Length: 449
Ligand SMILES: Cc1cc2nc3c(=O)[nH]c(=O)nc-3n(C[C@H](O)[C@H](O)[C@H](O)COP(=O)(O)OP(=O)(O)OC[C@H]3O[C@@H](n4cnc5c(N)ncnc54)[C@H](O)[C@@H]3O)c2cc1C
Image (cartoon, rainbow, N blue to C red):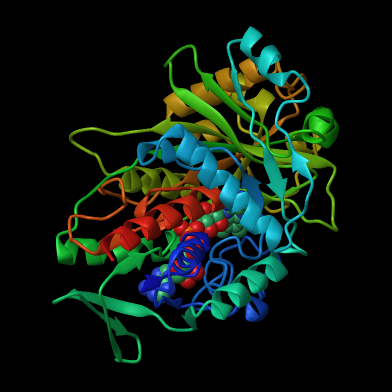
């Protein structure tokens, strides 16, 4: 039994039926990919109209409606080498890429470093991570997911969609209790519930005494610059990733989720807001945006990184009048707030129109603000122009990660037969890595047969 039809759940099912004729049922609380539509203006705003959210839930999982960037590297979006050897991890990535290709993913491969970026970055004390990337494309993704579903059904996999798992009971195997009160018995459970099911999975872990620990959190801003500044880079590397250690605090800062000719968008979590970015295939802006994030791990007396992140997000929401804050880099460095007229003087026209011009240093801790200023200063050596006075910064951008489940090499928890995979268990942060953990867990289940 697989809970969750995201990449982790689908690729686990793929492995289970391709190695032997296992009886596999995949349950998901969301809809079929063909029926997943988001009514909000920007598909990335977490509106509260659809329950469950069509962006995050349903066949294909989170990002099922996105443009689907595949990061084809074993230590990106998670670290597979925690569970398998480097060679096995590389084989897994190849296998996942081939499956996507068989089901219709674009043949174009961004090879990673055709520009000598690695060398330029290294000369300035920055690590560029060359990552082969494939871009499925929002127009292709639903047909790829449909094709995977058809293949799985032809191999005997059953899907139960629009059905939420409410409780998992351990009694001589497992009893799964569904939202309509029905019960299903199974010998093995693979919980692949993604971020949208992380809170539920956590509460089940507490109830069942499954061991977990807190994971780090990423906090920072979304940076917006004229697209021409990064054009020559993104032509070759769709989502360039740079790792930086900052001078004052020696903190780890990274670029994440570059959106060429994209838009900055607001995420609404109810009690607080955040920012994110996306690119739309048919509508291009004149800007490119990316996240610049500081990785934070906490120790005693507060290990709960989520609590820390939420308190920062709430402060930023208060300062921004319930909207994200936007500030020119020059204003941040000069220690003054941005105003509407100062933003108008910027050469970068904000793509998130209703952000509040303000002062990010009133919202984010001094340490994170220092990391942003020093990080951009270093990055400018590799991307000249990124550190311009006109560069816009939006806050808060916070990447909450799920509690990390303590698992063995087969991704089995301390409850025998209870396996986990993907983002919901804190084991991955991307399509390919979550799919890989699904396959590893499936192999663990097959070993137990
Ligand atoms: C808008 C957006 C764009 C993205 N773009 C990219 C990208 O370009 N490249 C990339 O690598 N990553 C991207 N990501 C991240 C990527 O989508 C996730 O890392 C990946 O989908 C995680 O896979 P998963 O299988 O672990 O979980 P998910 O894909 O989240 O799937 C989990 C599934 O479990 C279901 N579920 C949860 N709880 C229950 C329950 N109790 N009962 C039944 N079903 C349940 C959910 O409905 C969901 O369908 C994006 C994410 C979003 C939100």
